[in-house]
Length: 490
Image: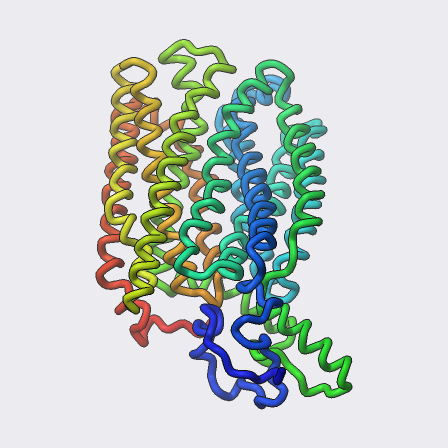
């Protein structure tokens, strides 16, 4: 079949329609898929192959965020072992992992545009295993800081590339549901972590947290080496073109998506792109800030909830892990409901021919208000020493709202910049992880000054302001995206 055969545009191709004509290649040598049903195109893979890839990615995406918080119940034990009483240092051992999440995507996202996603998954998973073992054998607090940071950098790979992998494989009318499954890792991982970590730290010591994660990472690495295949169309088509050049001896064959840039140019442009998106696009900047603040609240509550249930309710350390179940149950409910509703909306709007990225924000118009409600409920019920189930219910409401915001914002930003899904995800991950790393450091002093009630009320009032962002962008986001002033040269 002729390589230039015309066929309907995929989401990725449609998003590149604005590429200047001067970058187009002569038709006879523009290498494309063999028609709309080409089985080599990841969007046309059989269901079992997609499920295998996404299941491995789900395991991958759950494990590294799990590592970010599983250590949280062992903060006090680390301070005792390394002979310090500085509680801020204890919180920083947890949050420095998220600083790695800030730096990692800025390197991984550009490299993915040159080498694709699969190789980076394997390399980063191997490095994550190495640095996790290094954490387990660290002999000083500075060593632990450094190894946690490097583990965070390597562990950010599934966070940086995961949504792009979903875009590669899943059509948009089904994408929200799959995104919901993928999003369980970044949220449920930090929720499950402290529950398991509390028992591990209490009975066999904080170092075994890292050994358990290392063992699970080894299993995950073996699984993903078998399951993962390359899904990024520009890299796949570039490989196809290289094969044609070799088979025919004709050096003119190039990928249809090739923009005529060297690897150095691609890396430089891709390295700058997340910053352009973050600081020059009002859509990315403000919506990512909303998601980042919500994520920061999650980690702030994580680093303080153990001490609250020990001091206010007299729970032993290992039982405090169960206090995180409210987050977990709320997150699962939020994921299921938001994913189902978002898929129905996308399918309906697509059938009517009126689907736009702002369609992704409709569930957020209602679900985002659960964030401040949950914070008010949690803070004042703990402040007034109500029955222990009341603050846990509050965290459940918060978790439900958090998943609604996380999923809607992520799918909205990805659908707004499909061609650059990895870069917009990196921009989102950078600000989210930065807020998640530093906001928890303010938790102990905020609660000691304002108390649990007013401290959480302050967080809730800020969340109330952010809840108006989805309302604004659902009405005016389309105009902003298409306005000439905000057309970015990416």
